[in-house]
Length: 169
Image (cartoon, rainbow, N blue to C red; front, side):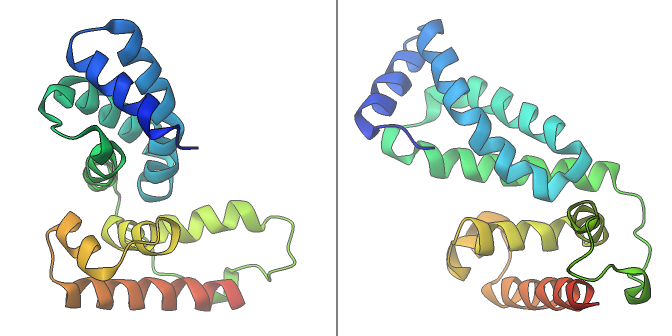
């Protein structure tokens, strides 16, 4: 997904100078990445979180000092917006009833995975995405979420355990 670093740097510098075409190309480049981060955390509100992220990028691009840091900077914004959006719209989750979780060969499994994710807290979904999708280490995740590394470990353990139990039915 990521473009050539030199091209990204040109886009960032152009956007910082007020070049609307560079900004549009940059946002178009970032949109799928942002959607991939926000969706699993904010679930049905993922598009809203992604939009808020792209607005924050648009407003804050002038403060980005190093174009090479673009994706890390955007990732931090996306995770923050996804968690904030999920918290704002979250209804209290029902306890996970493992008797109603489908077997792994069930054709409805993809929809049910979304349901399982919905039952995790936004904080647990954020840790899962950052560790298991983005492949970040615990220290980096703890810095991004402003929690201790121990909190990251415990949230990840609980989230994986809940998901694994539900997955195995």
